[in-house]
Image 1: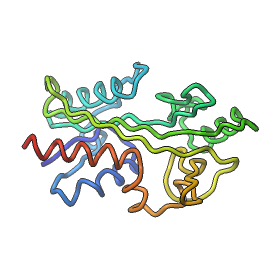
Image 2: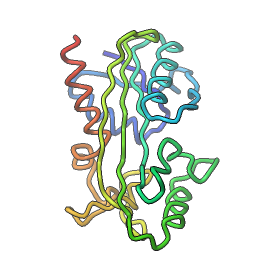
Image 3: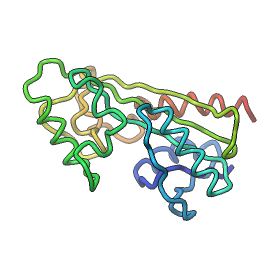
Image 4: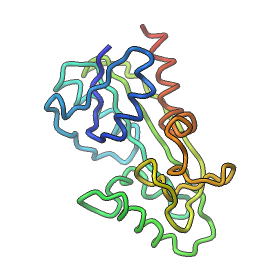
Length: 195
């Protein structure tokens, strides 16, 4: 089954493709099909993911998969939240986003945080029953970036039980544990029952 991914993020495509490939699904980035990025005007992950999935499906004519995900930090009232990718402004920069996050937290004692992912599948642009799955990965924000793998906030997302950041995990381990991996596993279960 060919699916359009409502994203042009190469790392996200690799991460999702690694999980979907064994099921025989081919994931194609929307940019390869000439689909521009959708607006993300909403204040929730689910609304943004649904808008992106419908947009990609409408313009490609294919079933679509979209996710909206981000980092929610308790001490910052849930920020950066849906603004995670653009937290430090444009142009997008993981390094600048991480620096801004660490600067805003400063010496704050409460460093609890969670990655949240909402993944939406639509069979077609006007699908009246989109499949929606969520995942959450809890951790805390460390004081300095660590690790070379991953992307986004992975270098500052510390997992106390492993004594590692998300950027210090290998891809397979991260896929098993991550918010996106959890959401995608739930979505795959639901997709298999829909077939």
